[in-house]
Image 1 (cartoon, rainbow, N blue to C red):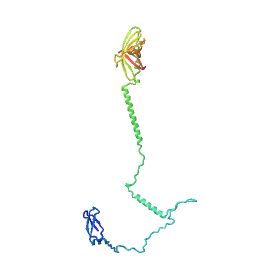
Image 2: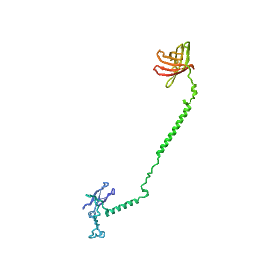
Image 3: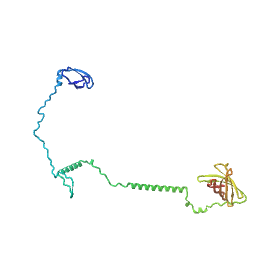
Length: 294
């Protein structure tokens, strides 16, 4: 029996038994419990199955003794493909295709042609151009080489121009000017009498020139005096003792305030008032010195 829940309006079926006048039901949807009255007519309608009438005109009659025809296909001996086999006489040539195989092959060819004909120009495979590419690598290398030659030429020209501006090559000095350059003559030293000299100049090292002031007094063939480094001051004088020859060659030893031997001067006095030569320090290092009375 179809029942509708008074709470949620859900319809569901409820089985009825004969002799029942009141049914207590629980809604399977919302769980609401309620009761309702039934009559004998409701019970009979619930227990009586529905009657369905089928007319004979609705169902077409089945034909009697009708057997569907099944096409028979009996392949002949020529239609059956033969597998290759080895015989004692050697390999046998393959047999000609049968009519069934020819028909199948013809159908496959037609399908392929139809599939090819359906290809539109938009879907045709692209054709790649496999023509050889232009030799761009060689041209780039040639351009780089030309650029290198240009830069090198400009650089060499710049160096040559700077050398012309700031310096002269030895080959550019005239020969007559070389012939006219002469070293000053040595000073003729008398073995008698006294002389006093005051020199200023430099002791020349590899990286810098140290200015010095030297005072010398000659007494016969002996020469004595002192000198100091300008950067240290005149109170740091070093004592000099030596001899001078008639040709102006001077050999002097250097002593500090404690009287220790700390170096030697080997030089020549020239007539133009210059004094130059070699200074050897206490650690046996040699330096050039150039002094002048001017």
